[in-house]
Length: 309
Image (cartoon, rainbow, N blue to C red):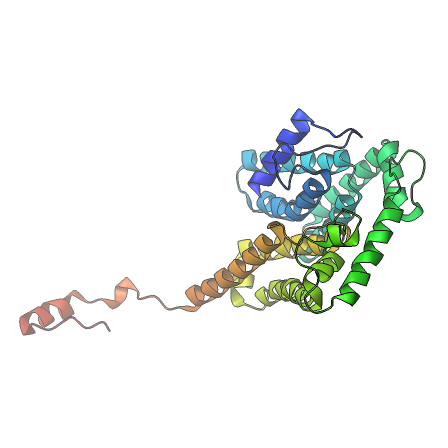
């Protein structure tokens, strides 16, 4: 989480862009692409919020709050439509999880202020607003869309067709772009995975995501969830992050990237920690007052181990 925040801040400062002005990540790899950078920000934003709420020091809170503000700005600067959809979804979950269920009225007020400011920024950025409108209306003037909506529809239909023609094993990981003749990924994690690995591969992936989301709900049934504030924070943060990913994955090719599987690992670790915390809380540790020095002295005379009452 801290790495994503650091890369985002550095990317905004350096402001490396593509030819159409879209912000790129400074790191070579999956965070360099504007869409991948934006969806990573959307996934990690609720985790940053969990850090912000959980921190005790004023300086740490200021650093996390500032990083989150830069992360919001970066999503707008990427002009990523899939990233904005994922971010909007994760913000709604954050309001529900941290604000309403967590009973934090100040967070609700902050969310309203951020929403108003964000709306003002989008209205003041005609190019980005046009790109968002192109999600529904296609290549409208000023969007620099270059037929993206029509192209994505064609890729979607091609991935569904290939999945229907090769339902058992697909055409092989990474082979969709060449097999379809478009020389582009499917821009949809679910249909792209189905085309390349077949229906069984798609089923296992969706099952993994669904069970992980279900596990965040299972954490809440453990006594450790009620007794430890950090467990409650991370349960909400991971639930929001995974929800954001599952939505954003419908508009991006992410099935072979590591970050969704990191989320699954974090959720499993949280469940294990909550279980251990429960056992530690309910255990009855031996109190020092149960030891009697006279028992030790008597046992020493008899050459026997001391007994604990």
